[in-house]
Length: 367
Ligand SMILES: Nc1nc2c(ncn2[C@@H]2O[C@H](COP(=O)(O)OP(=O)(O)O)[C@@H](O)[C@H]2O)c(=O)[nH]1
Ligand SMILES: [Mg+2]
Image 1 (spheres, protein in one colour):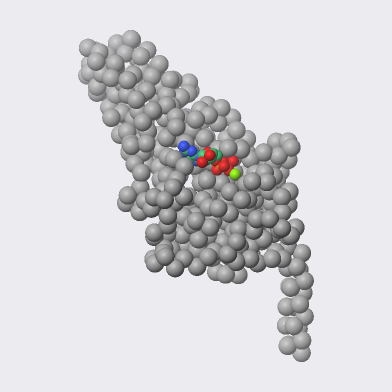
Image 2 (cartoon, protein in one colour):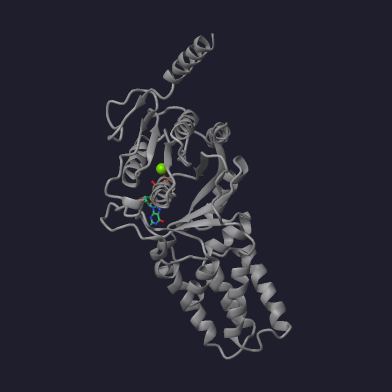
């Protein structure tokens, strides 16, 4: 009797599964001739990766080990030089007066700190100057400003969370071109190298090339990829990825999503659905990371609010900080959105993603 029941259940499960994850492929990225169901490409065994640390990026350079990661200070070239020039002028002044504050205001606005935060920072500095904290030294004034900048990020939890019961799902949201897929690729490499087994979910089924791009990153980092046909329901792809992760005991599902749909309402509805489905047991959504492009400056803040309202965003990944002269956007994001900045993108390579470190950031800008 029990055996009959088990057989019936197994048959039922097999039938249910047939509608979704139909094909399990090995050793190919699923390009060309794909059937309409989601495709799962298990990771290649990585014989050349004892310990899983020696991943080679496309450019051929080895992934930076955790202690050899790129430093914010080295990659903030443009932002540093713009802000640095303004600061040098202020430091060169003989005393603190109205003109000093005007110059500082201009420097902060130029760096994209944004008007509300600039006003707050300056008001605080004026108070502190009045109470004699800076003496009459512009350099001491800048030191106070630097400590205010660091204090902006105090108390934020920048740790990426995992559930006690795997698989954990990290969902990536944000408009087209901000760097979602690239960030997932970098993280798949990083998490894989630190010993976690990773499944990436190609949830951007709106753009034909998005799945191929993710497949390339998955292959490089040794992660499994689950993808659907172009135009497939992204939530079913993410659902299949979670099932696949659970079945093979993987720790982490990194889920890509579309950044554009026919309408914004469609997109937000879709993201809410993806989030709901990803959170079904055995999956636990522990991170919803909003990816923002630092080079879009204040415009990014408007998009950010829309995404934050639609899905419970747990943190921000700020990409392309290497490509902007306006490093102050980091401060604006923190103060306007109240979200922790968890990761920063400093380039296109697999190793170019670092945890955000406020002290290092301030040191670099105020150097
Ligand atoms: N310089 C730089 N380029 C980046 C960074 N992150 C992503 N990109 C590039 O931005 C472009 C769009 O990235 P993609 O991941 O496709 O964006 P998505 O549409 O949000 O998935 C690609 O050319 C990436 O190589 C970064 O931190 N620095
Ligand atoms: Mg993408």
